[in-house]
Length: 118
Image (cartoon, rainbow, N blue to C red; front, top):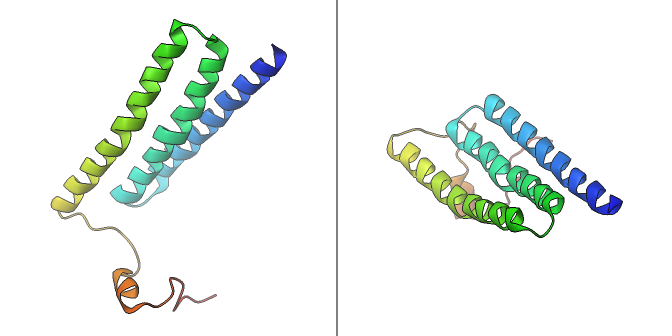
């Protein structure tokens, strides 16, 4: 019983840490695309660990099944919503804020870190 409590609290704390780091990323990142990446960390890792810890706390009850259904809803709708938001941002003309255009490197076959200063 104590091992189950320790495992559930470890998962809850890990999920909370990912949620805090993702929230800081949403505040600190420069453009909509990198902010969507931070939000996906909150969706997948933060919510996943948090719900897993809560499911361990609840035991095998109806509450666990409800938490599992909510978690599955997060996992299936989160990527779809993020993809739709990214497509809408591209359609609206929002450009990513990067220093260079990296698409040409993929076409000419040079390694990913070519041209970078150490």
